[in-house]
Length: 262
Length: 255
Image (cartoon, rainbow over all chains, first blue to last red; front, side):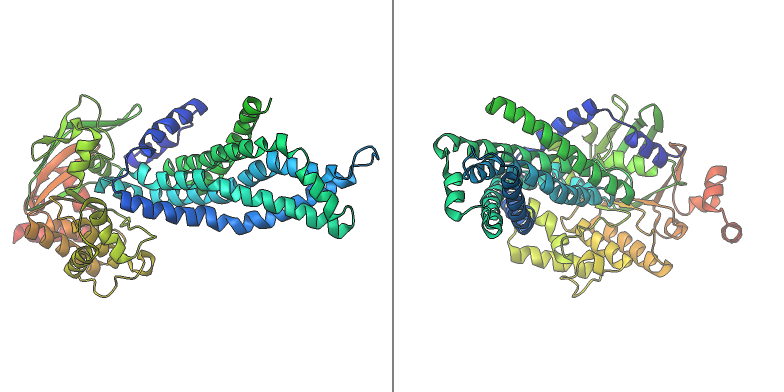
């Protein structure tokens, strides 16, 4: 076996979960080191806010309106008991949107869109030696490539989720009113019901979003950065990144819920 | 001057390099030649620190500074003195030609935008790329990409230049242009240049100092005159593999 083949087989040898986790945390140490130049960092940060966060808004908006419509219609369709007040539809739509649909479902969708994009972008840089070129220049390639992406998503993703919450509730209103299932007045009563005790849900949801945003980008960066081989491996890294980020989101969702809500 | 002193490199249980020692002198084009998979690229990646050498095995000295024992911060300082031309050029896809040249200047100098632009134009002029500043790498030919990569490598006035197969994928005429460029730049800036190549034309044209790597060991060293007369069978088999090259060698020896 020649040196190149030995090299590839060594790096592509199967790693267990704990090795991945260990390497992920070692990588994180380099991510949060001081940027070489803050001017360059800020420029990249705002560019990432635009390309990761702002560019996701149209998709999130479209999905949220329809998601809200479906939640309210399904709730209305399953409310057969006359003992339940009609405003319960609005109340359930609001609660399920804030608690789960907007933060978690939107995060899973973003994991697919942004996660695969980041993993393939960094993976391509790896296989075309652009990351080696950065290292040779003396640039901390991990920090340079990942920190702006991770911070942009972690801090700005919650704003996308707030937009999603609003549009989801809006979608529920449109769907119910145009179907004649309930009036605007009844829906609004439901939306405002028990708000004084449930306002906390928004903080809980936004906290989840911060964690999910971090997980989506950091996991995608990790799989992209450690891509070995050629274009086939870039595709594999991208798929692995989406799968791992989705699993991490669901596990983190459970842990945060257990810690904060129960 | 770069001194490689008895370095070894293993990946897992597989040893790739075995006690390799070599000296690369400044103001010379130093070539590393050898068949594919014999450890040339691994040796170069060890020298520039992209691979760590086996612990406790040898040293890599940049003008006496032991690179292998340096921490990350110290290495970054040395790396600012290194320029590297990669096999696939490794230009940043998302940046224009000019932005690629400006990139290291932006990261490590306090130059103004105007000064950086001037420097970029100077480097691009040096490699004969004119009025292509706003193109993206994907819009440039292979030869142009190599020349742009050389321009980027020299932007920071490096003391050490590494070129990984600079002629791969290029036609013979463009290969000669790239070879001549590397040679001229080396002499002009008195750089320590290390070139990995398979190209026999490069060996004969620009090989001031040649190292032949075989099975992870330094098998032979000399210059482009000595390689014609060498009786080292492995070198002869590698360099003069074709009938044409064997005939050429005979003629050269006889003349």
